[in-house]
Image 1 (spheres, rainbow, N blue to C red):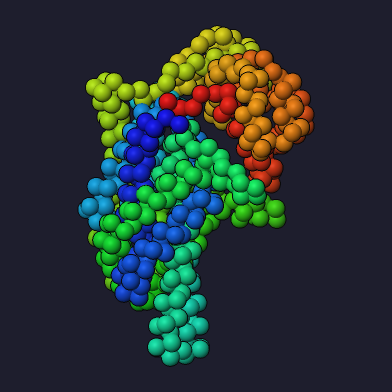
Image 2: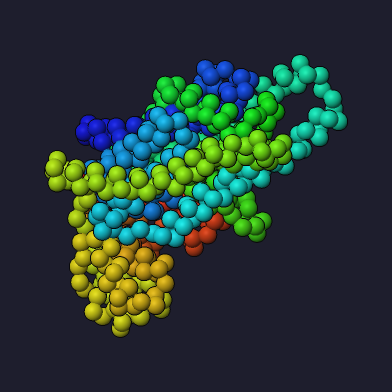
Length: 495
């Protein structure tokens, strides 16, 4: 393990601190501001919940964020995380609850623009849609949950002292759920760009398994915890008191609503359950707890009296949300320039993209091979350059197919070195039948990654991935985990 990797990871830890100081504050903001839960109690529950959520359920949203831009150099990943963290830290000092998700997305796009890499705008549009949907959905939940709770209290007529005790318990339980959901959903913001350079190895001890990705997320969760303890209180008070006055019951409802929204956008189990009964699924993307909790506070404010909502504060927060991704992209672009040209650091590893006849054939009838004759065989140093060439040759080709062609064209020259077989066996993770299939490819070289994947599937059905649907995701995820181990053994990590 190269110890310098941890130097680069420091920007991710800085981003984790920023998220803990800003976004994490929103989970307990209304509870602390209403003085129903002590800050220290809230911070401890937040710490435990965030770490547990990051380790157990953090992978779903993380992989969605990584699709937005394929950062292939540690210097680039460092600056993306640092730029996002700097912007969020500044907003935190000002006292505005901003979105770490927006800062990270903006920084990734800044890297894409600087390096000439492709931005997957379908993923970008999905993430942007959640920036609108999450506050609206939280406001919707808080509006109707609050009405339901108040009707229930009117019917039961609970004594005020007992109600106070129940509300405190409810706030702690809701906050614990919200903390777990925050860790599961937002760890992607902190460590998502470092997945390709993860320095940790999978740990196995009997039935206990602690993957390298979970260890990386644990590190990010600890950074979030430090941010919570060191600076979160100020943002908690902004969220809890500056937008609209809240009663303890209102604070409970806001936390419950926020927790539900964070859970909806992070749960792979819920996604599978919805698909299994034929219902539309919810995209697994990192959403902003800041936006969610503000929507929840406004939802309750509308029930009581819209005039009590401090719309000037809401306007300032809304403006900060719009500015965050734009500023983050600009900061990242400028910082990347200095990191590369002044400090001589590599922010992008030159790659070769070559659209060959095999790649075109791999995509079948979806592509007009004759129209791409002028592009086939040529080499490009960035994904953006190849995409521009394909767009020029086939302007009517849909963007999804274009992006698949670009991804398939990345030249990696993977040689199945038999010397690596023992190391893979020692992991004691990959099924023997799959390892046997890998042995049959000993000494062979594959220009493209997808060629190796197809060769393994041809050797045994145990390596064959099913169609990419939500219902097939658990099956494919298990195979993909073994594929990642094989690829990691033969392809150099980000450096």
